[in-house]
Image 1 (tube, rainbow, N blue to C red):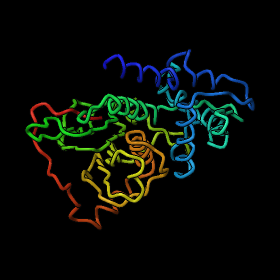
Image 2 (cartoon, rainbow, N blue to C red):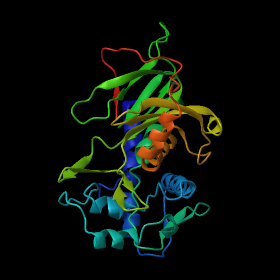
Image 3 (tube, rainbow, N blue to C red):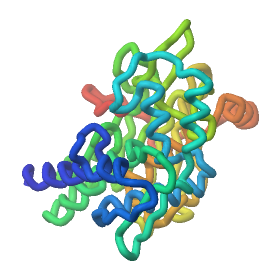
Length: 317
């Protein structure tokens, strides 16, 4: 079984990594412009989902942002941790836009119409989590937890005999040490967290995080440090279901916001869907919105299951 899920992860890495020269995605990024490239079903599916979310989020999530990510020192292209010039940013930002990517799902092919670098870092880990979970289901497992770099899926129970649920820890959004501030029991739930408190650099006391807003070409600057998205796992369950986001600010906001959320795309699967939403929320929601919400909601709604203490929580970043 171990070899099986390792093979699933290798397949995702081979298709979508920007850190290996032999990946299918790198070959696509290096292909001539305006020429259709045959792609694997897996890569086409993730490109199509990403395109749908980019359109639904009005550009807050955009996989053509890769050259900007590299320019800010957060991609595979190693460069000094310095703030790019306005001219360099303007030049790269002019190329960004999901309209530069055309996808033909019928014939399983795609092409770039501008010189953009497609980067699937915001969704690939979630897709890999989905793939491993699907493999475990095929092997007949009913109780498991899959966690790949903070994108996870929990099914069934940790201990079926004692009816003990899986537990995860939501980290305190700080870079000093890894510690959980909330322990959340999970059963048949997918979770993804996106934050700016691990991967960043500072220049003259100003922090620049790896979360790049494709609409400005710059890292986000608001006080929202972390977003966790919880939702049911199956595509058919997603539209209109009740789920919540966990918002954590560096100053005063730290609570779950429970809402009714319509998914951007009904075909987005479990963890990959949560990952996309977490990244979008981290970009879209800013300090002003959070403070306004706090002033009008003196008693934020808490989870139905209160946080618990655990000796060895599974920390989640």
